[in-house]
Image 1 (spheres, rainbow, N blue to C red):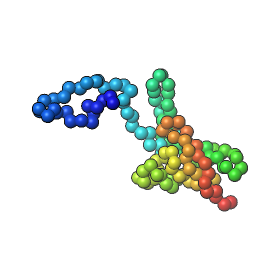
Image 2 (tube, rainbow, N blue to C red):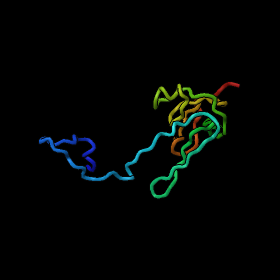
Image 3 (tube, one colour):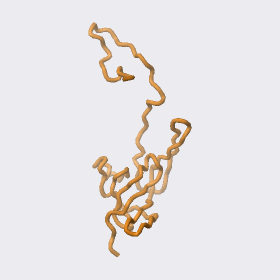
Image 4 (tube, rainbow, N blue to C red):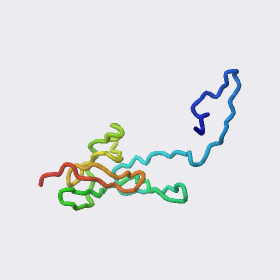
Length: 131
């Protein structure tokens, strides 16, 4: 396994320092999470490996929601973040991630896209509002 030096002690049994066997690589760099919230649309473009791009969705007020009973997808306004299983603190802070339950004009929906990776909020309607 490469980079074993990340997990073990930096000291040998004799007390000497273990030298680094490999330098840090660009591919191992991590980035901060997008933590998408409600508000007027804000995107951040990130250059990724191979010169490709990812779109970090920082804020958005609309979601593309699919109603499976009719098969129709609509762009609807997000009212609130009801639940987020990724982190219970996220629901309080209204952070939208994949799997979070949002309240929309049509009803409650579960987010199926990854807003921090895909740059869009897409979901499936799970609880329709009665009109």
